[in-house]
Image (tube, rainbow, N blue to C red):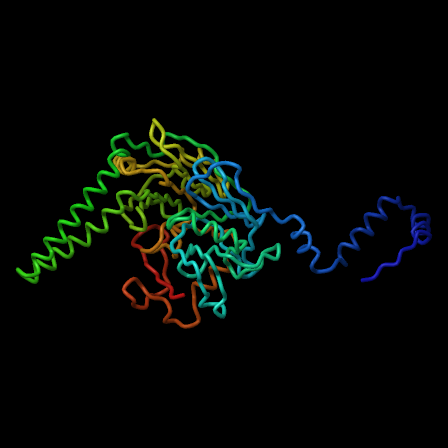
Length: 404
């Protein structure tokens, strides 16, 4: 659209119609906006693109990453606050990056996509087995990916070297950040439990070594005894490293159940009571960031603000024996997630909890759930499995392994 409106012509219009100059100018501005080039929004996004930054202090181990879809920015936090920031590109319309709670489940220094023509995705931190990840990539200054979170190449390499498997990744529609938080419902481990964790891990490791020796001896004695010893060895080897893993707890208003995982191992699932269960509670992530003399220091991140974080905790009643059991093994990096959502179908035996906000676009995740060939969904034993998720009111888990 071309607009030619001379000063003389403008004066005639004002005089003839008795309009104020402010009204005319507002009308002209509106027309100009309608006729603006299609990439005007993109250019504006480039102009306000977040800058890459590093905290001016000694930094600790990354505990969580928070991605803001609104600001197209990722911020990494340690126990004392933010340590790294950078611009990102999330998913385009129709292939949106899903908002929710995730964790790093795999690291691949030199990953190439099996979905998109062998595209290079260096320093990949996978957060779903169906293909959502943080990785290095081109950043045009606006959402441009197929669902992943692209980061500057150098920043992605720096984060890759620091991040560990299990690091919490929160993807929020808006701008959120962790705040210091305390509440009587949060786990308060006793001093003996915190001090005993490394010792317990050492004991379990020693028991695993001894069991291996017994297994070797049993092999020459009887095949059945060998099999029993092998099973014991495998169990102890599995339990030993878990003694140093943080515990993760998820409370779902949708299922009215509490789920516990340690590492990627599901260890407990029990029903709980939620006051006014028909009312939304929001999505909140509470994280134990460090030890204190009293036990643990916590932060809270509210992603979907229905209730305030404190109000959400006030509405939940956890059986005391369950609370005591969790508290006895809680360590720094342990977490409590509260949400209106059920565990997402992406939650499986090789993940921590995956919680997706179903009132937000998630095209980048949805398109990965149902691959073109029906045989690409396998369960943990390599067998094809139907596309089911958690039942609305709890029940058993359904495990998924997407080949990607």
